[in-house]
Image (cartoon, rainbow, N blue to C red; front, side, top):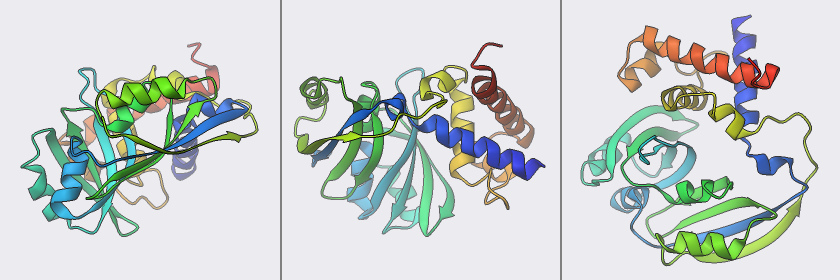
Length: 246
């Protein structure tokens, strides 16, 4: 029963992660590239020779995001050591090995490219960061002003380059809960804990990571971790089943 509940919740989280753009008839897909070294994740990639793949982001109340990412081409020890020389990395935690990729959680003092795009209701399809460049594929609402979005990003990432642009049609999905509706019901800490659990395999059967493993990674007690998970689940299920009415 608990395993089935875990799978149900994980499926709901996956659905909730899809932005409101998923419910539109069409989206504008952009492929962007930058070689700027301003991003803390770019500096980590250059220092270690790693390839970093963005997995998710939890915005902080003080504009300091918590970012989840995976790596190849380096070791956890090398990445942890390199992070000590990157001032914008306030904290870096190695979480697990996932399909031969290291999974990390980083608390940053500076926003990253994905942060700016999310402000425009974008959905980040992929963000790959290497030593030479970073490439991002993103969906924007069809009504979005692409020029305005690019100009906004250029204020922070001057060399951002638009590699391709295309309109992609898709079938509207009925009953999909928007990401905003879910996140508005969760505290930043609940978002962080729930996303960590989801990405670390906590909801899989059998579990890849236990509650104690994740509590240790977060520096909290197992009981506190459980309280955060239960609170986040209540908020998520309230939106899914009651449309946030209770």
